[in-house]
Image (cartoon, rainbow, N blue to C red):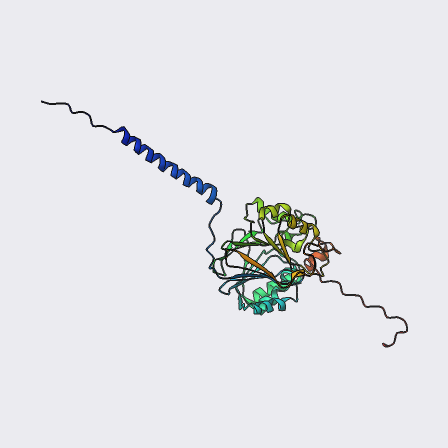
Amino acid sequence: MYQQQPAPRSSSKALKGCGCALAVAALAALAILALWWFVFRDRGPQPPPASGGDLRVVVLDVEQGDSILIISPSGKAALVDAGNPGYGARVLDALRRHNVSQIDLFITTHAHADHIGAADEVIRGATVRRVLDSKVPNATRNYEDFLRAIEEKGVEYVGAEPGQKYEDLGDGVVFTVLSPIQPLFTKEQVRSGGNEPNANSVVVRLDYGEFSMLLTGDAEAQTEERMIRQGANVKAKVLKVGHHGSPHATSDSFLKEGAFAAAVISCGAKNLYGHPDQRVLDRLRAANVKVFRTDLHGEVTITTRGEGYEIKPEREAKGDVWAGREAKKRDTASSGFIDYGDFGPPPKPKPTPRAKGAAGGR
C-alpha cells in the first residue's frame, strides 16, 4: 500500500542562515566598493616605494636665479635650471662637490636667462642624458646657445607635457610633470606683470616615498589656478617658491591647496626687483610655512629617506627671513625684461668724477 510520505522539511532556519550569509557578503562587497570609491579612486597609480637611502635636494646659491640639484641614493642626478650666464662654473663645481658624474635628467623650466643662461655651459661641461623643456621659445642669444649646445652634444630633447613621469634616477624617485597645460597661455592671456615663458613654466612634482616637493620655476598665479582647476596634485611637503618670491605668484589659494610645511626661495641679495616681495612672505607666514632663502641662508639642502626630512641651510640667516626687499625696478614684461630674461645684473657703479687739478692722468 502506498503511503504518502511527509514532505521533507525545508528548514526555515537553514534558509534564514543562508540569507544572512548572503546579506553579510553583499554588505562586505559594498564596503570594499565604497572604500575604493572614496579613498583610492582619484589617487591613480601609486609611486614605487622609496629605497630607504638618502635623497638629497640641493637648492644652489646662484644669486638671482634658479638651479636645483637632486641626487638619488645610488648617485644618479637631476638638475632643474642652471642660473644666469657665467654661473656654469658654480653649477659644475656643485656637481663635483656632490660626486655627480652625470646628469640623468636636466629640467629647464623656461627660456629666461636666470634659468637657462648657464645651461649651455653645463651641457658642454658635463654628461647630460636628457633635457626636459617647456619648448616655449624666447628670442634671445641665451636661448639660441642653449639649443645649440643640445644639438652639438646630441642630448635627447623632450617637450614637457602634464602627466609625464620620469624615473631616470631610480630608487623610487619619480618626477611628474604638472605644467605647462595646453593650450599654452598667449601674450593676450597673460596678466599684468607676467609673460608667456613664466606663465608656461615647467612645473614638476618630486615624489620619494612619503616625501614630496613642488618645483615651480617661474610659474605665476594664473598657472597655479590652472593646475588646481585641472586637478593636478599640488599638495607637497616642500615648495620651491615660484618666480623668486614675486608678488605675481604663490597665491593664497595655491598655498591652501598645497598645504606646504616648508618653502625655499631662490633669490639674490642684490636683486633690483624686490624679491622676495613682502606680500608673498606675509602669505607664507599666514599659512604657517617655514621659509628658507638662498639670499640669507646660502645653499639649502633637503635630505630624506622617504619618510621625514631635514632641511639644512649653509649658514644662519643673515637678516630677517620674514622681511621683504625693496623693489627698485618692476618685474614686468617690458622689452628689456624679456630680452635679458627675468633679471639683469645690478648696474655698474658710475666712476667718480675727478676733481679739477687732481694729480695724475694726462
